[in-house]
Length: 170
Image (tube, rainbow, N blue to C red; front, top):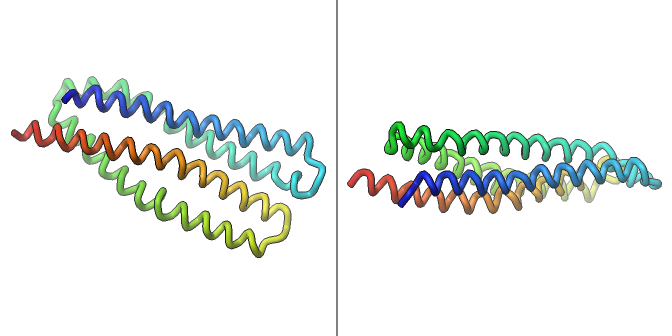
């Protein structure tokens, strides 16, 4: 099994996936602009700032992950050629840490935050609060969808790393 190819393929898939954060960030910012230009009601005008903030956050997340994974692709070959066993060990540690973060943040904290926002939406009647809570829910759903797919990819990559680690030990 060529773990260098698997690592590179995983990182390239991550780069593609993170571009969706950027895309949704741009969509939210465009929506904010649309609410600013075309919004006539109080609720429509209330979405201007929350949609802009949501778009900016998604854009920052996407760009940060995009450039991190781009640099990771170029460093994989160098680290693998230096010491294949150390490369596999370092990737295993990184991937296992990431899987734990996904479990804690993506699959526990984000759904709890979405539920809290939904509950607050019931009692908050001011347009700014409603727009902010709905924007937060929308952003968290986008993160949950994209990171849910990323979790499946990194879990498969982790299994490949474990197989290679087993091969290297024997």
